[in-house]
Image (cartoon, rainbow, N blue to C red):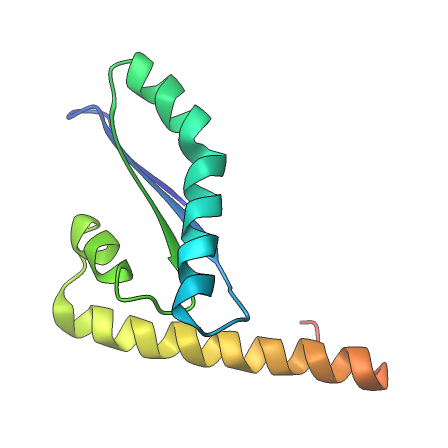
Length: 110
């Protein structure tokens, strides 16, 4: 996701990651990979005069709070958003797993 404020020449780059490992090193590795991947883009934007803030959202890492504050998301909505994101991640992960095991799609396309 890219949030751009042309008036202030500010860009926020957010790369969402789902890490299926729930240990701290998995969060750190996923974050490092995403930041490394997006560094060339951030450098290009900085060369054009933009202030670039970059982070990686993955599962639910406490470091995500900083990203949400940067985006102007209040604490109350951030709490709700976290619950919804984690719930959706678990639901879709389960559906994908069951479909791989059984060969039957777990959801209906609308």
